[in-house]
Image (cartoon, rainbow, N blue to C red; front, side, top):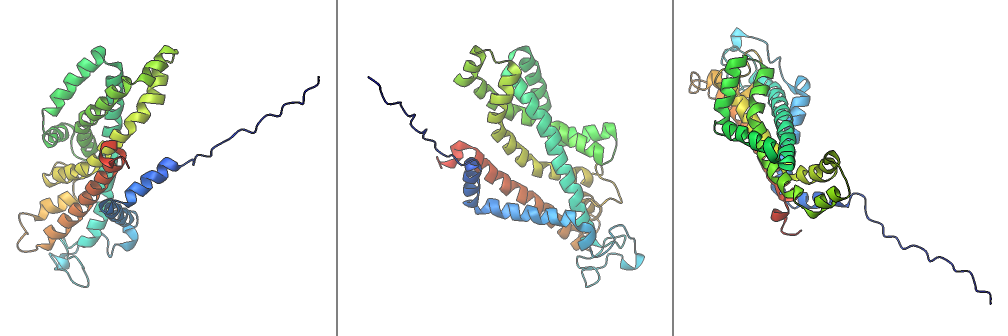
Length: 300
């Protein structure tokens, strides 16, 4: 008896939005007004740094004896320094140095520290034992003291300051990422990958690294503001950026003690610029931490 040919039932497919996780993160970010405020403030600083040549009212390197310690006026909105240079122009151009130092330090120190933290947490054994003792020794020194020692040994300059600030960041970033890598390497899916014959490189790239990105990004955003503060501190002490380069810390160093009473604008405006930028990085870093850390999301 002939039977009718069977027809294959159409497969039921469910469409999953490709960027669902990204949209969820954006929705969580929108519920954090301080994070939005920090982002707006940072975009403002980025705009000023990118277009400093256009929006600056004067040449930040131009000396003028006639404008010695000129108070805020129509000619110099934020006043002039002891060399007659326009303070607003120097602060605008100083944003470039602060942002460049902050991001370069975070990428170098955070990148190297994150890579070493993943290797240390996943491989364990002798490498982890030796590297963690090195981390303990490095963390025993205050970051600024260690940076000062490195600058004293290497000399002055932007590149030397970046290197000196990035070195103390490496052990802090590695310690955070290592703790995450230890937890990931003990998960069942990592053990299953080993059972089916996956190599260490494949396991690290496909399983360990993606699951360590959240703590790495958190420590990265948190250290951006600290890097800017460290650069300003070194410049304030005379060990960082040197004249005539416009640096916020250098501006405070040259005016804080000698001209604080005679020309307070030399202290107020660079200090406000530094506080504005660091505050923006801090509140944005807190928002990123709240979004990426499941313990702080409250299950949302």
